[in-house]
Length: 298
Image (tube, rainbow, N blue to C red):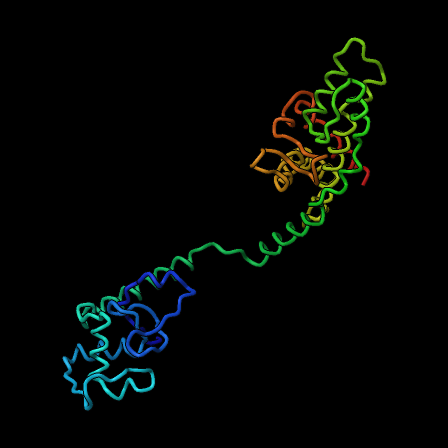
């Protein structure tokens, strides 16, 4: 076992300032902290402890006013000890042999407890680590954090419909505005076939189809998924596609304004937008049907 050093170091204000120089108040050497109530180096700390425990009495061979430095601190023990006391080092802070032993025992016990806790901490085996690595890689390969593909979704017809209804054109094309346009067009008795086309459906259809394709691509990269029958693959995708989409969408969710920002202000969706009307009641069925179609086609 490696030798253990026990010290009675007092934390002073300088300990919290890492940029402040630490200079031994006795000899000017590099200090290691507060020892026995003063900032000192390891050498002067040990000298003071030994001197106090031996109750040593030193005599200066000169005039009793030697300047103590790193280089000459061994030359005059009397002036060195006097300097220790002058800067505030106190013998009351020195531990007895019994106290030192108790402190050593406490340190050993604490290290053993930490080692025991570390040993009990669950760890991934090689296979688990490999699977997690595969899942992370699959996610990165099937999730475009730049949302560059969103620019290909159909939104121009909705903008035209907004102008047709004499509404101001808002660059924030969110689900709520799309939903209102769709409901207005569907509920108006004067709406014609052209108005129906100018609804939220094209944008949502592209968004859902794109999301499902990415989830299927992710699933096919999961170890063992391709070994399942087509029926089982479809069943798994039907039951979990919407949850996976929601989990993946958290990467673009902001708590500041409770919205999903998918690449810019043109594709920003509020949290209430995805829980209203047609979209909320039909999304799950749409996801299931889309998943089955993509699995059959691939």
